Amino acid sequence: MTPPPGAKKKPLITANMVTFARLIPMPLVSWWVYQGKGDKDSLWLALIVGTLIGCTDFIDGYLARKHGPTVLGGLMDPIADKVFIAFAYMPFADTGLVPAWACALMFVREFFVTGLRSAYEQRDLSLKTSYLAKAKTWTQMQGIGVIVLFPLTEGGRVMEWIFWTGIAGPLVAAGALWAVKKKLWRGAFFMSAAFVAVMLVYQRGDHAFTMDFCMFVIVGITWISGLDYIVGGWTQLRSRRDFNRADAVRLVSSVTVPAAVFFALVESPAPAWPVIAVLALELAMGGLDNLLSHHRKASGALAWGARTLGSSALLAAAAILDGDAATWLAIAAAVVTFVGVAWEFWRGRDYYLDQRIRDKASRNAAAAATPAAGST
Image (cartoon, rainbow, N blue to C red; front, top):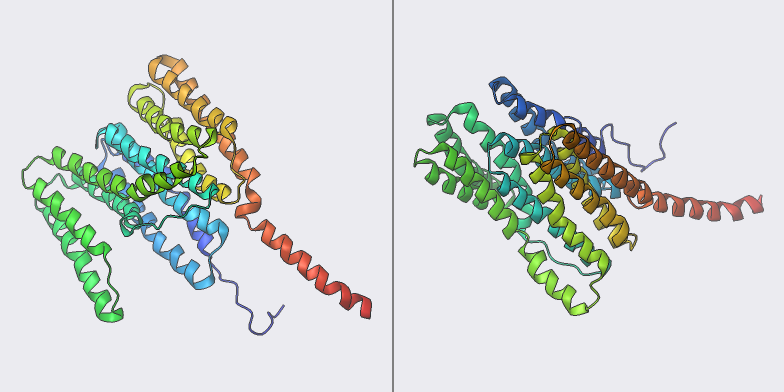
């Protein structure tokens, strides 16, 4: 059927399609990192596919701007970014590429700020996000590539050229953007400064320490980027004097979940996949909770605590016990998280699938058609 004049043509590929396609190869990146302990080809695959996943963020952003955003896209795009970070950094910590405690600290910030954001959304408190907060995710993604390149290149001149490219490349791109569009890309200066700092440390010749330093820089930027929410927002929240049990449970679990996850990852003989699944699913749940909090439909303290604190307790037990018991406890934690998160996504589907908007449009269309039908 020919579309009416002036109607927008439906795109062949939508932003949501690209976002969901990004999620599919993410577990493979984790698997290749694990295989890379004795196989550089696997690490190269992890680097190449991980880079492609990062680049698709530009594509779905472009498609969303061109054809219009959706509630589902606005929910899933940041979730995909955070899940990718989980699938990359957890194998790094497990295989010893970076300190596990530093990774845990990075994810504590992610969960804590997400929990605060839900509390703010429920009270219509809005905070202006700083530019550093917007650049934080890309800093984490760039860190993935740099960390993987150390064991691949084994240091030497190759890494120096990579650092110089990381320093000069963003500045050249910023200059080109200014020349063409008179638009200042402030993120270029952050990126170049980070590479300068890492390169200065690299000159010491201690590659292991340089990798750790990269992680320290990433964690530092991650926490600094959250200061607006932690300091400014908390002041507003405290002044209202309506902090409740649901808020407290969310903030407590923002610490217990990543702490239990990395405790189990490092200490437990259980396989890594259920542990990684818990972190990835809870990161996804955080994005949905922000959306439901905005609509005053967030789950209460009991439901939230049963899922997060229950899975945390199971993971902690898996880290303490040995043998098959540890494995089954880790799997049980993943099942508890999966069931709880799946229920929350099902319960909140009207708010991210635009069902309420479609229902309203259908009612309006029916109301408009009724007089016309009666006049014939």
